[in-house]
Image (cartoon, rainbow, N blue to C red):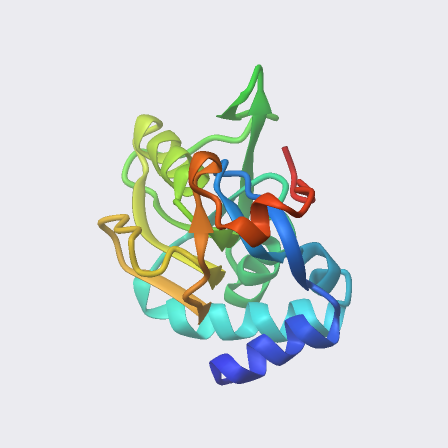
Length: 188
């Protein structure tokens, strides 16, 4: 599967939005990946999950972990394709935590899966949780890397689509974005 194939999936499913968006990172952008629109179709989930599973299989992970909400569907599919255990972290009082009785064994090799990464904050927070519980981060996999190559997570990183997408701090908006009402379509 090529990057163009992945981009076409996002276009065909209406998951690549154009306009003025406030990203979870707080940055503003003309484009937004609403991955949930693509990932509501199980054939798409299976196809993207298979590709990420194939890329990450050599890492030797025994568990897949994903931050809720964005990484849940894709993370579970990658785990299914690899025949691994799947767990997730979720927000509690504004920060991600490991709940629901999930445990991480000392030295357990864990693959982090997320849908879209811009600044890598939720992935880094997930990695910190894995390490705080004694686990080892084997790598990170994502559907879309929109960091423009700026995020270095210090572990092997895989993406199906890496795009150069302009993103701007709120106080440095170009005139066309400043003149357009902003929408915050992602999870909070």
